[in-house]
Length: 282
Length: 294
Image (cartoon, rainbow over all chains, first blue to last red; front, top):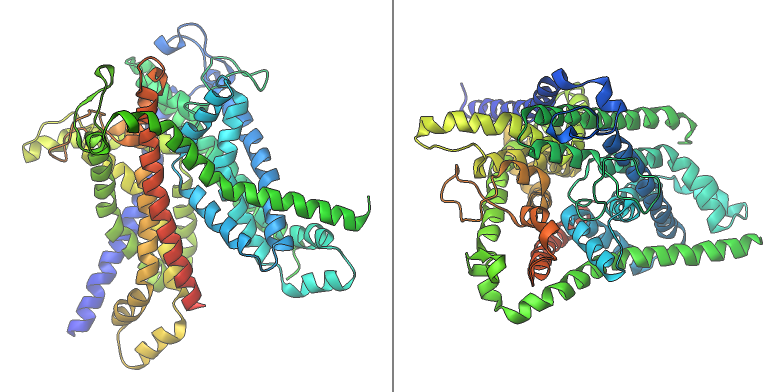
């Protein structure tokens, strides 16, 4: 065989091997967590809050953490969406050719890269400064900062896709910038915006390091913004940290719940993209 | 309300949102630096960075084991991830049938979305016991909670970033360039090696830097499998401790020991400085790259 062909097949084999390794390790994460956790997964884990002695292996569930994570991530996604929607409006309607738009994009990209533990530490400093205690509110603010760059950059990208002719048509009919933004561009970008929101929501649910300082931890479901709140990732972390095997088992089961939640959001986001795309003008 | 007034009002509001968001990074940097000042005033910087003595209750804050631990585990993860991820990205961009690509890319996105705690859980369930059983075969004994476990778990976590960014970069190489090479009689692999890879190198470097930034700041997964011993690891099977794990493990006690809060927030500042530097670098490289291929 030709030497060049030999080199080609060698690297092709190497590439296939790498791809299998990547796909295989993804499946391994799923299989290992589900296989180990499934035996201790039960309905009471989903429907009960921890009873006395839960962390010693007695009765109860992690409803507090599931509800806490959903409330926290919903609040944070709402806050991050309001802010990032305003920023997107600026970038696509009002920025014009100003250098500020580039600066905003660059700093959002840098913000995206900041480790979540550093964001948590930052909010912790702010909390010390205003003498606030760890609560749902501060958790929402922390996660909102975490989600802000994800949401804004994703919405920015989909808004960019609006055909220029549609924008021109809207302006030529006498629309203001705001009307063009809301009635033409946002409508056009709607599937992408929904995908971005779900993506950000998933990231918000999964993050643990940033809320370690800012939300506290509790066995009950929060009833106000100023209550501490439990989150699913931290529930997993704390259960795994106990020396009792039954409680560690529950950590694996909680891992399944978190994994399924994130998986569900990811599939939902693909579905919404497909479903809403039929209303988009090409 | 008047249409034009509404337009004007929203314009100003959106401008302030944009300004606020671009100042956020500065706020974070200033706040962390401000809090680091007390310890920087009392201890010389090279003692903080290069002393191995970590005894907060006696006022000794030597970050050396944590800095080295972070660099080792990140370096190991990158060494494991880079060849596999770049090869995967080349395969997906150049060789894979359309159908395989349309299945694998969403899977890679999915991998990116797995919460770090779940990755850590996988490490505890699978990697740690594996290392515990394999280590005696090479003459080492370990609990499994080790540098190697951290490197493996982290490699899986940075893989999606490196793959998806470099795959995009490969696909951005103009088709005409590859066609010219093929027309001269080069094989597909020669074209990939001499044209696509060469043209895409800056973009791939940027992808790697982005992955590095992610790995450097990763907290929970690493915390769960690394063993957290504040000593410089001597082998792959030794436990280690990273800066993010240090912060996460000790936030509860920071008010009880003098200077402790300043020391931990200084650790956060180091993390921020390193990550911001590398991310800005990667973004600039990527921008240049996009500008050239467009």
